[in-house]
Image 1 (cartoon, rainbow over the protein chains, first blue to last red):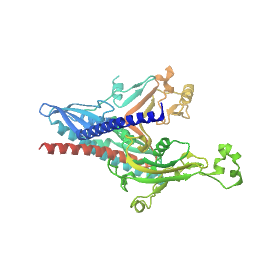
Image 2: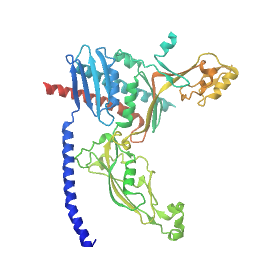
Image 3: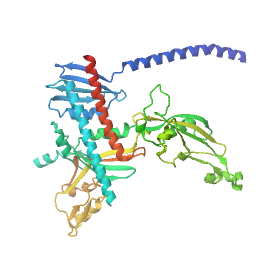
Image 4: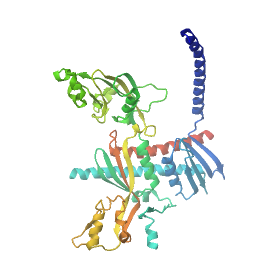
Length: 141
Length: 341
């Protein structure tokens, strides 16, 4: 094959590749934009029994919040059942099922949030106290 | 039997194989005052690098949430973008850029914001370092004699900048940063991390842009090297052991949990150091004589800081983040209800 032939083939190929690329890029951009629009931080499904039962889907949460929330709600005497799951480890969702016997599931969940928040306050306070105490005893030594 | 049943509510028993752990879920919510009263936190040791503290009276779920947050959700600053203008060293560009990302940066991340997707680097979301270094031959007769180059151990004596260290990174203040960080200049946590080795004529020139992030995205943003908890060991002797047997048991334990009194009686000197190696109950004759257990609601946390935060700050920040997380979701729910109305 002579040099001129080579050049011709290259020239023929080039525009083809460019077109393919440009189409691909547009598609990727579109897909990304759609994804961003769809994201909802919190969705509530399977609402039954006068809002007493519900499944909450938290976006971008994992076992960190899921387990601590389940553990807190399970102790609430208004809660019949509470469980959580991370359906797939590579999807950023955590699902929490709450079944209450008296109250609206949302109210129960909010109570759980409040409780965790208060426990955090107490732990922080006690921790700072003990750090101060430790530093003081070290200073004395 | 009922005694063991009662005890299994608060203790997990270590057997020769495995552990007897009965999950006990209290289905009653403790009033907050009781929770505060039961909660006991003691700092065991604390220095510039790590902290060990006891937390008694919390649930495993809470302890684990804190541990997970310490590792992956406390934000720090780390090199994220590298503009490489020159790299003629033996380390390929992408490997060097990745290596730079792992360098811990000493700067308070609380003073910065997370960089938005379409945002440019500015003084509120970025710390910039420059690294420009060139290896040259020294002006001594030994250095000029190229036969000396053969042995790599001569490098430091013959060349300038044969080794590139983190101390060669120069902080470039953006905007008002110079004024803001006058008293706490921004620098790498350790000045003696070896980044690359060079020979005469080789050169590295880079701009390093630090961004705020969390360990969930990449481990370089994790503020801890390790953060773990374990249950406090509870060891007791069920019956008196003395004489030769006492001597035998004492020498069996590699952590020196047991000691012998002047009277020849064995006693538990320090149960905290037990690593649950089970060496003491491996022999059949001691199985029923020793109670080897763990206290189920007594967690001993150890947090080792990489150096961006003080160790005790990691703990307080971690709890704060859990609280903020909960608050954020509470607000999201409020927002949803308002939308419905």
